[in-house]
Image (cartoon, rainbow, N blue to C red):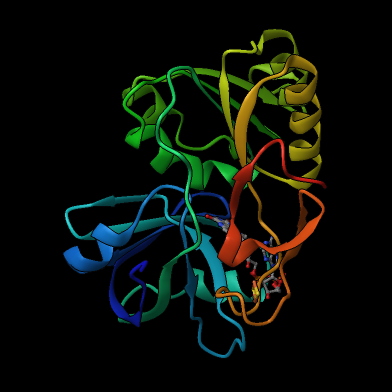
Length: 247
Ligand SMILES: Cc1cc2nc3c(=O)[nH]c(=O)nc-3n(C[C@H](O)[C@H](O)[C@H](O)COP(=O)(O)OP(=O)(O)OC[C@H]3O[C@@H](n4cnc5c(N)ncnc54)[C@H](O)[C@@H]3O)c2cc1C
Ligand code: FES
């Protein structure tokens, strides 16, 4: 039985790390932190907003859980103003990334970097991170990945850092069949990576970010097609085998 908790936690800090991106740290205590693993997420309660919002675990250390998020709408805007006090959280939820891989390759786009950071520090064997963003100012955590021993290849759509264009353009040239890819990012990127993985016969897994209401499999709001069947991203995922995802 997976352990999950529905309770309030003390906010340690909630800082803007660069324009529009925040890192929230909460004092979780050891029991909640020990139930966490890379790829899992929490539903975060925000005042005056009906539904809780899903955020991936960015890191856990010494009874502290951190989240990295971009202000996207009403919920995350209000969240970004919560600097002290208590926050209600349900989790950890979902199934995380498999942690055994001899040739790991991480592919991240946009805020997908939030969830794969915890993966990158947890995997024993380090590999290459392929990271695409709109512009140089949207590239986050590069120093953290470097410090954790990852080789980094970046691309930006405006060419302000790294290769100009989508990260899938470089991935296509470099991916090998004995690599194992971990993917998290926007749907068009995920679609493109699935196609490349099929062509190269490369295995891996994908973390999907469908819109969520309940986060626990009750509302059917986050259904996706997996091997021809409807599965719930929150309960059956968010991490799925790359060969099984039909998007
Ligand atoms: C499993 C999971 C993990 C996520 N992890 C992160 C993360 O670590 N960092 C981060 O910045 N973002 C993450 N997201 C996306 C984040 O949940 C949305 O940006 C956020 O819910 C937007 O809420 P809002 O009220 O600010 O925006 P609004 O657009 O006003 O939200 C309205 C509704 O849409 C849902 N929603 C809107 N956009 C998304 C989206 N892209 N994905 C899922 N639901 C959405 C909200 O939950 C809400 O119910 C994750 C999403 C999922 C499903
Ligand atoms: S969010 Fe309700 S079933 Fe997944």
